[in-house]
Image (cartoon, rainbow, N blue to C red; front, side, top):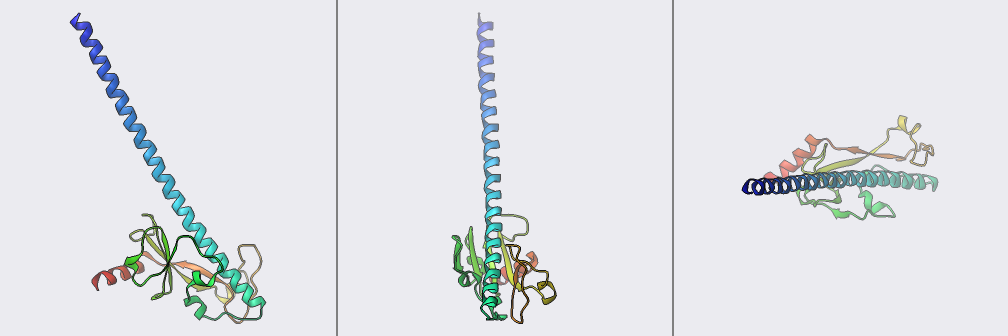
Length: 182
């Protein structure tokens, strides 16, 4: 009788360990999938904000051109979020120091005239931070440039269209290191 009891006890213990291990694996898989979904959602949010910022600035330039006003180069150095009729929900203002950026926020850094976003850790980011600068589309490219609606861009003497150029990782690291040394 003790041999039967020992085998039943061993089987029950093995089942508990098996269920525990399967549950642990299941929880880890769900956590990994959830983490990945959050990461993808953050990347899509960043891409959508960049696309809306780009489209809004180009529409503003086209409106100004249609009204006979020209935009000059100083427009590239102004806060792009303040120039638009809409403001991103996660826009947190202007930065004095890059190191002050909070996660999940968009900023304008007037010292370098950069649009800065601090998101999660991802490729092309330094401490989760990525930056872009406004850049005028060169005259020769303006003929072929199109807005997001597919409308052709009309060339003018002033600034007509802009694009957001990503700042290199090394350049961003230089500014972050300089802040840390101060």
